[in-house]
Image (cartoon, rainbow, N blue to C red; front, side):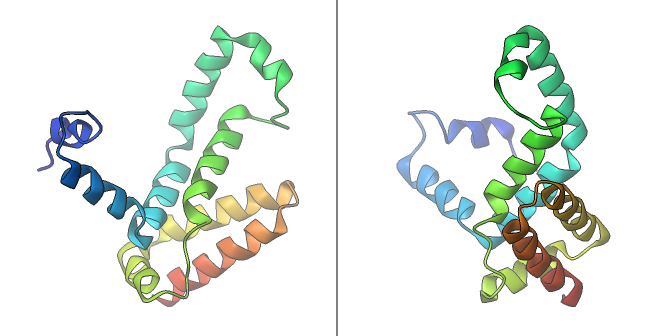
Amino acid sequence: MIDPEKIFGVFEDSAASQEKAALMRFQDTQVFKLGMFKKIIWNQKTIEDKMDKFLEIIPNLAKNIEFDGDAGEFVTHTRAWAHLKDFDPSLPQAKDAANVFSDEYSITACDLAISFWEEKEEYEKCAHIKKVKDLLTQA
């Protein structure tokens, strides 16, 4: 079982620099990128709830930022894309990541992301997500 105190301790100054370096290297792996993409998409409801509360506290923010729809959905897909954009389906490590995450939830996450970015006419993002989806379905 993972001790949450040890995970959060990595970000504190008292944490050993080796632990910080290991965490930073893990964040660069294809498994981490694909896993975070899936997790963020599937946690959209939580993010939407947090954004709704945030916008209640600061109502003028919603007026100043063009979300073009639901703020929670926008934040969800933008954060998920931040992880997936650096996922390279051609790497051997990506194939290993696909073997780990090849399930209906990951494939559905790709479909949801493609649908979101299609509405925004962000077709380059859609093409990249489609490559990831194809890799997942082949695994």
